[in-house]
Image (cartoon, rainbow, N blue to C red; front, side, top):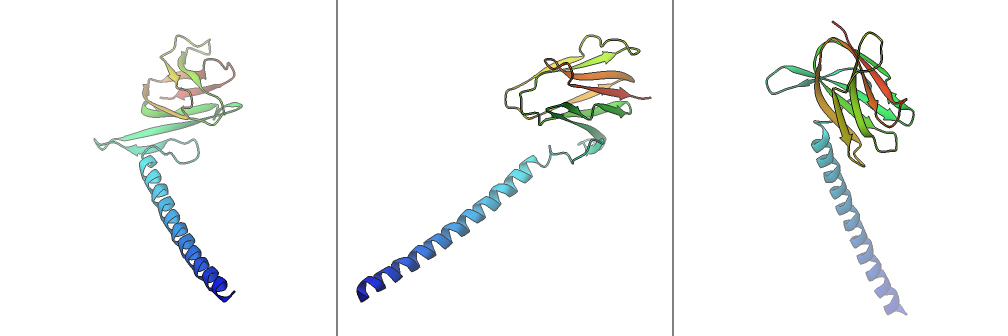
Amino acid sequence: MLRYVRSYLTSTKLSLATTAITLITLTVLALIGVTAYALATSGAALPAGHAAVPRERSDGDSLQAELLTVRPTGFDPVEVMRAPGPFLLVVENRSGVDLGTLQLLPVADGSQPGAPLFEESIGKGQENWSRRVDLPTGVYVLKQADEPGWTCQITVTP
């Protein structure tokens, strides 16, 4: 009986030591993975909110970004006002469905939108999309082609 108890205690100590080493190793690997992911995505990540966010370009000029989030109810925000000049249009898909085709259309004097300035097919499972745009003064509508209510008005003011 005493041999059995000694054997059990010895194997339990080894099991605990092995478990502790395994947990420490997994924790370190998880921290390395999280850090690597944060570093890899930090250039594309935008802060919460919908204000234009300055981005530094290599030539020293500032490039702004407009963040639009697609939710199950459509675009958030539904309207953006900005100054003329190039900017990064960023669409974050949090709708739970594929975006399909995004279109940017000009609107002349409150009339119906004109022909698309661009149409972009968003791949299945692609959650985020961005494109550099430079719009002159005017009113534009960004819309999801298959969902008539999913629109965002972009007004470029002088």
